[in-house]
Each structure stands twice: as structure tokens, then as C-alpha cells.
Length: 580
Image: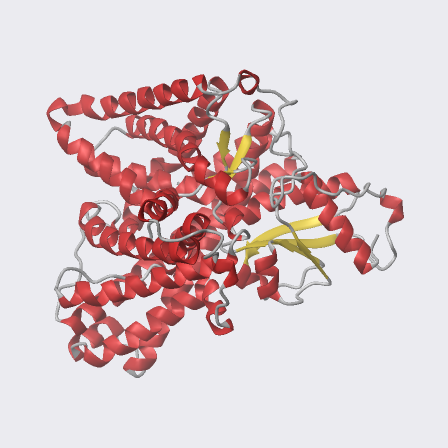
């Protein structure tokens, strides 16, 4: 799989006519990124096994069983995932090009990867040993249709959250988002103005939970320490595998190792996406001018940061309660997936708040906790023969799409080898039918798509108001102040360092190029950023507040995709520092 990802990155860079050295370096970085990802998966899998064994022993249960792991699946049938990603993006762009109603281009790279893994595993579980090329082709059609439809079914609520439709949502927690919004509305939980969660002040000490590495190590560590006290000593010794430390010290080390595995996994994903996503984004901008980008969840987090924390905390609390309940009833040993609890809880919080205030935000968080708990317990057995870890590190859409495919597979089993092709054909036909119906509802002027279309991915529109962003005329390169470094080291930051920071990085690169400023651009997560010392940091305000003064210039942005907006904010920040 690492070689395939490297080849895809190479082709993408070649198509963008990048210099030879950048093509070679980019392809190698993408390849190495997948190798790092696999190392992280192996560490995470080991930590997951130890956690389940110790907690199961403490509760007198049998740990969950499986005949395969994510690592084994990735080395076998799952090696087609890069082909599914590449083929799926072609299908996606084709549908967006043909049908005006398909107005969003899906650009959340890490979820493009993970959803492709989910679809590949689900097809194998549903249809058995499928031909490699059939699996890649069917998977490409399914994922391409999902990328087209998902931003559309969240669009009505996105307009309510964002105030416009300049960006769509591209995240596999979309079902949590719409269930939280429409559910809060149906239950009449509150008024979005009277009960606005942004009027609620949360204690400062809970803010550290926004760092996924810290929250994962903390929650897993506390649970492991308690479990070690009650687990059978023989089981603890077996899991310790001869380590000459006290059991409680080993428990803490396991929690740290578990968190480190996830951090390494995310670093690997971040590394190969930094080469592939810009290539996809460049191709989509050239082929589909006038379309709008669908972006990662953090694009909505600036709208209601308190709602994010309310949803996350409610989600985590409910999950931990259900973890104890499931263990007490002997059903399943749950593992807290802190990344999913944060992003899914945040999604439920923001979309629930948009409809019903803090009550809706709480409802959304509770809903996410319930879905993750029940989904993990049920999903583990469904993926036992492929990649059971997909039930642990999962979003709501993973469960919905994956389980639907597995269920359809059992229904169509009598059709034999034709069953998987029938699924692809039906999904493609249904997607086209939806796009045709939606297209008939569009105003006549929206059917014409071109560079003149308003609200394009590079339009100068402020996300918070819909007003044109203030843009200062860029200075020429000979205007640089002597106090400014000749080449600026710039860091784009977001929560996980993958989706929004990667898009922001590509937008900022264009902004600096227009300003005539030489830069070295990188992107990372908020936790890793604390150890960096760049010349300039660019991020949403909520993340800048967590970073302190790690750089002389800290630039807050609201719109990840508007070059004019980002350029204006950078110019203003450089002037304040006297670097213009």
C-alpha cells in the first residue's frame, strides 16, 4: 500500500508540473508516511489488546476475539485502498462535473483514506474473497458517490451554522451532525438565541482535553490503573511480558504507549496527505472552477467553541458511563476513542447548539457517546475477520455505511459473484437520480458552472459574515523589512493536524506567493505545535489561544479557502510586527 500511495502522489505532482526534485521528494514522503502509519497501527493494536485484556479480567469477562487485525488486513485485501481513493476521486470529480447539484468537492484527506478502508473491509466481510480489481472498482464507485452526497445532506444545517454556503462539510460524523440538529429541533429542546451555549462559561481546567494526545493518555491511564487493581495477577503478568516494573507503573506506560500509537498513526497520515491532498485540490480547481470545497469539521468549530467543549464533555461522560454498564452486564469491553469523542461530540455540540442552544449541544454530545459505545460493541464482531479496530476508531458514518454494505451483502448472497456489482450499480443509479432531482430545483443561473461563478473556492468571502474580506495590496519583494527573516518558517495548525490545517497550508502558500514572500510551510496538530518555534503561525483563534506565543507573529483566520482573506490577515499581522 505504501508504494501505491507514493505512486499516486508522484502522478499528482507530475500533473501539476512540479519541479523534478519536488516530485521525487513528495513521492518519497508519501511512501514513508504510510510506513509510519502502519507502525502507529501496530503500536495502537498492541495497546488496544492490553487494555481489553486487563479491563476484561478486572470485570470477569472474556476479552473481544477476532481472527484478523487492521495491520493484517492492510497487508492483504486492504492493499487496494490507494486504488479506491484514486478511483473514487475520479468518480467524484466526474459526478461533480456532470451534475450541477453536486456542487461540493470533498477535500478532507484523512477521512478519504479511512472511509476507503471501511468500505474495503465491509465489502470483504459482505462478499468474501473478492477479485482485487473488482474490489477496487466497486469501492471507487461507492466512495465516490458518498463524497458527492455527504456534503449535500448536511448543507441545510451548514447554512444555519455558517450563515452561508461558501463551504460544505466533509466529515464522517455527518450523521451525528444532522441527527443532533434535526433531533434537537424535533424534541424542541430550546431556543438557539435564548439558550446559546456561547453565553455559558466553562471552567478553564477542562480545556486541556482539547489536546487529543493528553486526553487519550489521561482517560486510558486512569482506567488502566483502576483495572490493574482488580485484574487477575496472572493476566497482568502475561500482559507485562516480563517487564520488571511495578504493575501500576506498567499501566501508566501502557496508557502512554496507547496514546503514542495514535499520535504516530496521525503523523503518518499527516505526512502522506500533505502530498496527495494538494494534488487533488489542484486538479479539482482546474477541472471544476466555480465549485465549492467541502472541508473538515474544525471549519465550524470557530462558530461555537463553547458548544464544542459541551458536546465533547457530554459525549465522553456518557461513553464512560456506558463503558461501565456494558462491562457490568457482560456485553462488551469498550475502549474510549478520544479522537472520535472530541470530533463527533464537537459536531453534535455545534449543530445541536445552532438549533436549540446549549441543550441541543448537550443532546448532540450524548447522542455521539451512545452511537460510539453501541457501534463499537456491535461493530467489533462484524469486522472480526478483517479489521476489528475499525469499530474502535470510528465515526457514525463508518458504522452506517459499513453495516449497510454488510447487511446488503447477506441479502444478495444468492446472486453469487454478481452481488457486489449489483450493489455498485444500484448505488450509482440512486446517486444520479438524487442529483437529477436536486438539479431541477436549482435556479437557472446556478446550472452554469465556470470561473465567473460567485463563491468559488478562492473567493474573498469572510466566513463569519459573508462580507468581502479586507485585503491590503500586497507589497513587492523589495519592500521587506531588514528585521524580517529572508525566508519565513510558517506553521499551519489545527486540532489533529490533517484536514483543516492542510487546506489552510495550501491556501497560505498561494497568499505568500502573491505577496512575494519566500516561506517554508508546514502543518501540524495543536499538541505538536507547542514544541515548534516558527516565525509565523496561522490557525483559527481557538487554537492560537492554546498555543501561547510560540512565534513572533500569530495569525488568526476564519476562512480556510479564501486566498484574499488569508492574505489580508497575514498582511495585517506582519504590519503590526513591523515586518512589512
